[in-house]
Length: 107
Image 1 (cartoon, rainbow, N blue to C red):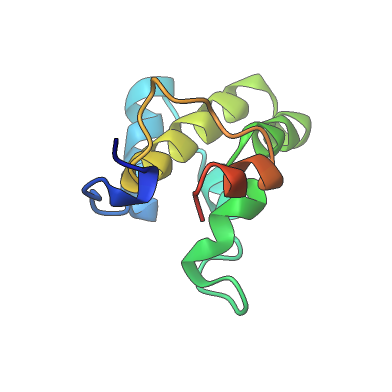
Image 2: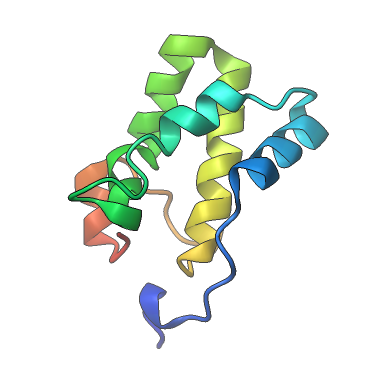
């Protein structure tokens, strides 16, 4: 059985691609949501391991509090695209919070 990190990775979606997806699906780019989710990308000490901070259900709920239900749907789309880049599939559990994200072998 392959682990999450042993599966082939797909290219990481760019800010532009995240905005295009949410525009196509939800009718708006939700730039503020994508910027917030990736706020720590490339920043020490996280680099691309920033995802553990906000790329989970708890992060989606924070987005919902800040910007509402449609923004939460945009956050879920963004997170799913990034998780798939890590080898996650939709038949696996969705990370609940930072600790669960790491226990799943994600970074």
